[in-house]
Structures are given as C-alpha cells and as structure tokens.
Image 1: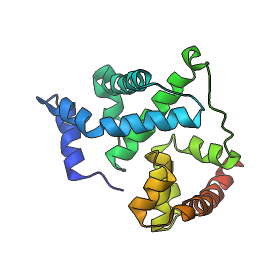
Image 2: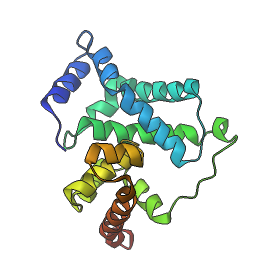
Image 3: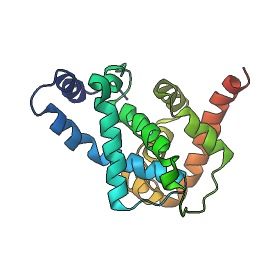
Image 4: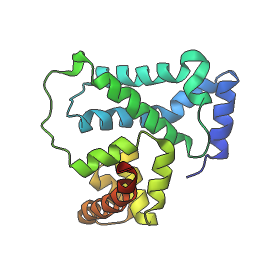
Amino acid sequence: MALSDYDRDLLDRCLDRQAEAWEEFVDRFAGLLIRSVDHAATSRGVRLDASTREDLAGEILVALIRDDFAVLRRFRRRASLATYLTVIARRVAGRSLLSPRFRGPTVSRNLDPIDEKIRARFDDVEQVGRLLGELGDVESRVVQAYYLHGRGYREIARETGLSENSIGPTLARARRKMLAAIEPQTHS
C-alpha cells in the first residue's frame, strides 16, 4: 500500500510543527496504536488492563516525537503510514513488554515457529512489502488484518467477505508462501 496524499500532508504538517497537526495525527492513529499494543501483548502472552494499555500507547507517542520526530523523519514513504506506525508501535510495545514490570501472570500461548519467523521479519517495513507481494490480494488483506492490525478471525471475515472458518487456512497458506520467501535469506 502506498502513502496516501492525506497522510503525506498530515505527516508533513507534523514535521513542520503546524498548529493542531499533532492532535490530528493522534486522533487518526490512536486506535491503530492501541490495537498494536494489544497485538504485541497477546503475542507475548501478557494481559493488559486499560490503564497499562494507554501507558504503552503513550510510550509509543513519546518515541515518535523524541529527538524532533526522528522516527517519523526516517520514514521513507514507500509504504502506508499506518503500516510504518504499526511496525514502530509493535517494536516499542514489544520492548516495553520485555521489562520486569510485565513478568507477572501471563496467558499461556504457544506460537508456531513459522509465526515467530514471520513476526520477526515484520520489524522491517520494507521486508513486509516484499513478503506481501508474494501473496494474492485476498491473502495479503487477511495477513495485513491479522498481523499488522491485530484483528481476529471474525472481524477479518466480516471485512473480507470470507467465511470465518476459511481465515485460518488462508493464513496458513500465506505463512507457507512468506516462509518460502524468507527461507533463502535465513540460510545466507
């Protein structure tokens, strides 16, 4: 997905520190940041209360504005802003979730080793675009909804028109294709 004109303009206005641009940015992407925090927590088996979830979203916003918006200034604009922010948000939330304050009760969850390899590659936004290019349109939409936007099977089914029972097999096919694209690079 390409950077939309609206997001390009919003990003430019934020970087130029124009009045109310940051507030508009936060309003536009707050939901995405919260979903990214939830996804990062779920994938690490950590339970979050509402207050902690908001604190982590706040940490992401601080990371975005630190050093005169350095993270946003590094955005190469080759992908959508939402995709870039999702990667950044998951990275920041993931680091925070590794801190001692989150070593308490966790939800038991065993991740598939294939999921682990794919998730590790999702830290590189350019790699995400390449991996998504290996997929068909429907598979790409399902993978983006699941991995980048943290949506569940039911929500993905509603958005794509697929049956809820077909989401798992679609993700499995997509994982195999993405893993095949990753494997040659892991043996280099």
